[in-house]
Structure formats: C-alpha cells, structure tokens
Image (cartoon, rainbow, N blue to C red; front, side, top):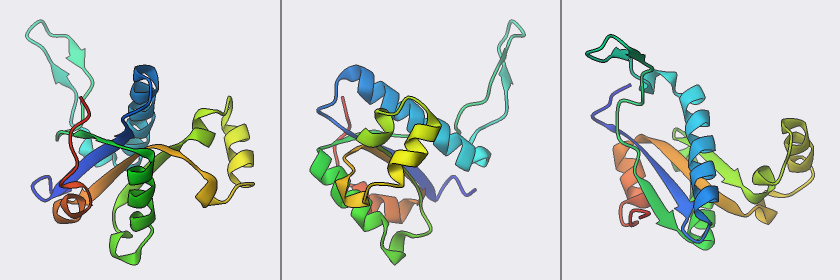
Length: 140
C-alpha cells in the first residue's frame, strides 16, 4: 500500500444522533480493517512495556453530508471509473437488523434504491478520493 498516494475518508449523515454517528463510523472502520489489513500498523509498546494494538497508519477524516449527498456519492461509486476504490456503506436497513442472518435476508429483498445510507467509507487513490469528496466539510 502506497501511503503517500492513498487516502481514506468517511462521510456520515450529519443529522444522525451522536450515538448513531459513532456506531456508523465504528462499523465501517471495522469492515475497512478486515478489507485492508495492510493499512493497520504493527503493535507498539509504551515506555512502561505495555503493548498496544496497531492502529491505521494514516488519518481517516470524517466528513459530513446529508442523506442526499451520501446517496449521490454512493451512486458515483458504482461507476466503472471508481471500481478500484474500496467502498463500505452502512444503511438504515443494516442498522435496524439484530443479526447478520436477518441483514442478509432483508438485503436480498430490497432494491438498492430503497436504502438510506447513514454513512459511506471510501479508500483508494488520493486523486480519486479528492475528486469525490475534496470540497466536503469535516463533521464536527
């Protein structure tokens, strides 16, 4: 992984309650860690000799967007031009499921157009990520 030319961002619905924002970021982050294990650095030790698990080796800005902006971004990411990017989306359907089996079953029954995205994470070539999200403000 070329850390100089790679970038990762999350875009989360700014209108969500704080707990759902945190949950959305956590779920997308865990999925990114599975999909991109090379982005996670080695474990480190502090001066006292205690070990701390490695974390991602580069910043992941969290940007704010409306449901409409996130939907537009998701639709762009289906285009051939962006097929090489790693994309994790998290929807209202996923958030409402109690088990992964329920999620699988429900996703198979709905068209993508009916999903409301709570957030989306995108990783890949810095130029492409900037093209898609460069003008979006940070979620604060």
